[in-house]
Length: 564
Image 1 (cartoon, rainbow, N blue to C red):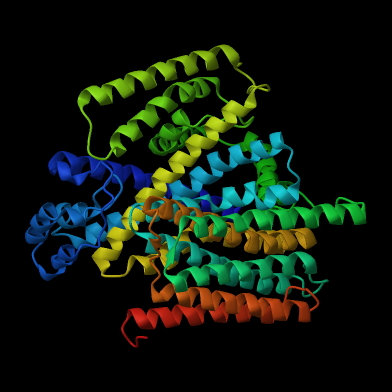
Image 2: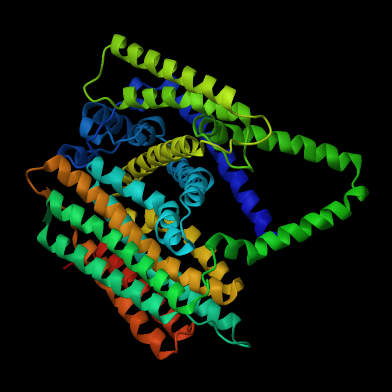
């Protein structure tokens, strides 16, 4: 109950922050010049030599004038954060820090919420329609759902010219999950099972995942050492994930054949059966229902008004996505929203296309695109109106709905990831910190904190199956993020540079992350089999020590204590 109330309070705080920031952004747009928002695709980033001259100026007015005359200082995304910080909040830097950090929190919430509420819903439904087994769905669609923020953030950063951010965020997230999350699971699991039998991890699955992850990191290390990659090498690196899926599938089918029993528990069922929060909420719901007769009229009146206040706070975050992302799940089915999403999705796509066209376009071209998209939206809306019912989502021809929901949720995730990367690059320039360092700390931690909470809770409260699922996810997820996130990013960048090879932005910190990560995997590979595959405190403490050694090493280099 306490954890549920804390989560609700945090969500309300984030949504209230978004509402206040929205009002502030609109006010600054009215007051400031047209450069406060950039609606065109600006693939330039903070790398031009002239842009660093900003730090030589002292007064806010001079910095603001400098920004307006130096276009390389404009980052990708829709909000010009440097203009907001130096021009709008120039005399009040504390206010600028507060606004940007609050907006960073909102973007992290939007990225995770869009992936969990919309993207994962489409992925789960696609898994049912395609009739995938739990093992295959876990390493494909589930990994895609959990890793989508990292994947899209990586692709966005490479396309915008800030590849160091994408590279460091994916590797930093994989390092965090494989060391911190696995370490906490081992410490918590061994402590909770002190009086009983400790959970055992399947030896074959563990060795398969860890050894393949080491092979993936070794392949990536070869690319980093080479410093450049061709389109064929990038595609070969990405295709390693299909090799991994094939190995997992073969292992699963062989085990079913020789054991003759389906011992694999579907992930969603395991989470639902062993989720203590859900059980507490269920029991607390019954208690509330039993004591509802004792509530006063004043209490009901208070909650009525509070629900309306929360509704209006949530509206700016909820409504744009709900009106453009088709959702045919039983829990959130609404015929008006379904018709609206079918009609407005093409218009939304046209708006983004017009805003991202490089070189600009005439008003006639823009109007033509809007008219065609409006016509397509009208046809789709009428079709949705005549083929859906009020009470139940459609049961036939689900694939177009799911494909539309998948596409639009991907688009929204991409938009938020683009804004998040733009903000991190701007923060790196404001604080004088390399964007890559912010990538493997702030961005990696923000995208991985959900894995820490969910996997630890599942391992501690889910018994034998919960521990197995949690440990497997801690390796399957980073494998997917590394091969799909970095692989696709390298493939897209190499395709753009073809026939010349793409220069990989390999900073020295990338070699350090890979080296320490392989060290953590080797530590787990040695200790866990020696402990008879039981969750062990020594393994957990060792993994935490490896991560904090790397963090201390990187922090010392950043502060200038020593250099290599």
